[in-house]
Length: 311
Image (spheres, one colour):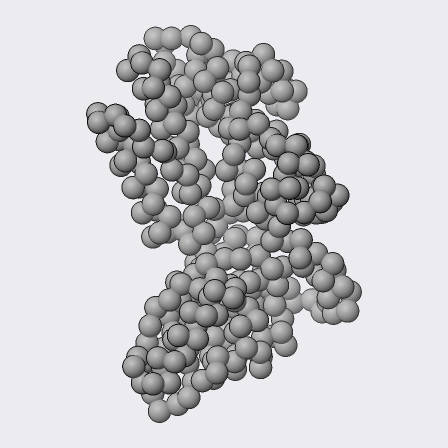
C-alpha cells in the first residue's frame, strides 16, 4: 500500500466516497492495469455509484443547496396527438408553469428534441395498436429552461383517444406553487431575458461542483468551453447565485474540505490536495479567512492517533 499508484487510488476512493455522501453519483474512478484487491474495490464503488444514480436519482446529482423531503406523483392527461388536456397540481410545482401555459399546448413544448422524437415512436405504436402502455425516460424543460429526466409511464385509456403520462419526482422542501397573482407581462419579460442563459449557467454550476479538486479555469477558458462570452458568463452566474464564479468555487472547496476534516481521519495535507489546493499554507490561510479557525482547530469526529493529521 506504500507504492505511489496505490496511494493515488486510495485518495481517489476517499474522494469518490465523499462525493457520493454529498449526493453526487456521476463521478467514476478510472480503472488501472493492476489486478489486485484495491482494483476490485474500485470496481465495486463504481458499480454502487451507477446503481444509486439509476435507481434513486434521475439526474445523477442532488443539489446540496436544496433539501429533498418528499416525492410527488405527477399526472398529465393528453389527447391522441399528445396535447395537454388536464393535469394534477404537482405538474405546476415541478415544471414551474401556470395553468394557461399547459392547457391546449403540445407536450413538445416541454420536452427536449430527443425526448419528443422518442414520444413520436410511442405515438406510432399506440396508433397501430402495437402497445397500450409503455415506460420511457423523458427529459423535461422547466419554465426556466432547466432540464430534468424522469422515467415516465404512458398509458392509453380504453375506448378513448386519451392518454395518461405519469412520473414520480423528488421535490425540494422549499418548492411551493405561488398562490399570489403575478404581473404576467413583467414575469414574461424577465423570463425571456434569462431563458437562454439558465441552462448555460446550470451547466457551469454543475461543472464547478464536479471539478472542485482541479484549478478553476480562467473566465476566458470557461467562456470558450461553454460557447459564450465572459460578460454573459459573469453576469449570468451572479444573477442566479448572487456571487462571482471564483468566490463560489472557493467557498464550495472550503465547505467540502471542512466536512471532510470533521467526518474523516484523512490527513489535512491530503484533504487540501483533494480539494484543489496546491499547498497546505495557502489552504490553511483561506480556510481560516472563511471560517475563523485554522483546519487543525476543527474538531474531528474520529481521531486517528497513529499519525499527525497535518502530514
